[in-house]
Length: 151
Length: 278
Image (cartoon, rainbow over all chains, first blue to last red; front, side, top):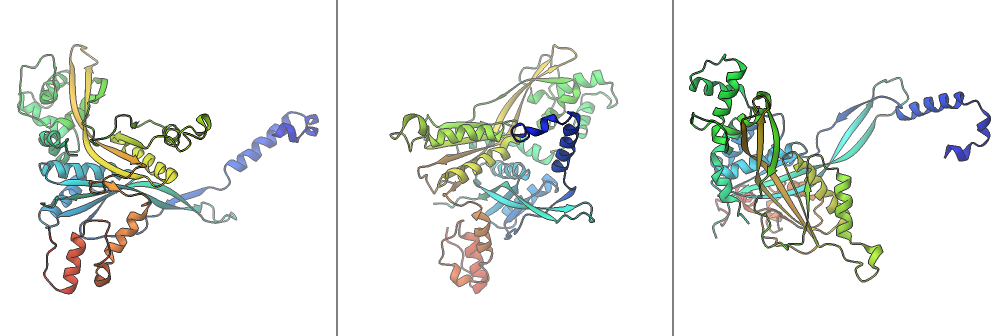
């Protein structure tokens, strides 16, 4: 590209363009520094039997909560949701529930894509830069853990 | 469908222990040492030997094992092997029953691994699903495979789901069937010090299998997802959640999930103690 565009500039000493090139590149690559703030996933519908699994809470506590819902809470089905990294844990919880029920519980898993919004806030408020937002997708899983209806 | 149930139930004690004690390590191995009559402050060499004995329940072909202690939690022990001078020499996934019985044999199976690149996986899978339009001209123009299965276990589960989601978005109108199961992974560990001792550890990792099909699938099968529910699950849920406010209207509409909790709410709202039929 640059070779085609600048036939006349070939007379310029070699060092100068290299310098200007590198500086302009650096400016392009790193305009302003931003802090990236992740917003929470939007809208979390919550029934009593919805369990949103996260990676902060202790695994045992989350498993116990599900067991309590199924055994003590009188629910015949619960929904275990996991987003991103927590997918693994959600699957683990669902499979543990199934295993501890001696295979009575059944699992029905659905997957989906969740749109997440990140806020980009400029580090330096003096800079003439706007706060930006960026959306990205992340995978999610929704596992229905239920006692099958006796036919 | 649930051919794996027997296996899962058989693994029960291990699994539950894993759940109860996800943190590996020191607390677990300390009682073992005391059990074997060695003070807990023993030197690393002793510790190592005792340790390999203590892991016995998980070990199939351990070399020397005079002691047969009571079963100890296996997965935490396995996690600690790396610190004990053991090196993992081999890791094989045991064949688990296919989660989709009655599936044609020629279905493309994409095995997603932790290090797989999504662009590689998708590049390959998309060309196979879309068929080679350029090569064979008109007659196979709508060709390509009808079904594809994405499987992944452990840390590759998220990537597996992402691949399936991307494919659903790109191809469109795909029927989906998702199955979860535990997969048994056999690991062979070798002691880096003695070289004589080798042990085999069986551990279970969660795995996912996603079948995407251009042809309709059985909607009664648990884990079925009809086409074009991209991101709609969460909105559907909101509709379910808002049911208590408008119970009368909602009762007639078909619900994406079992109507039991919804039905219960409706009953509560109307003050009638009727239970959902089942």
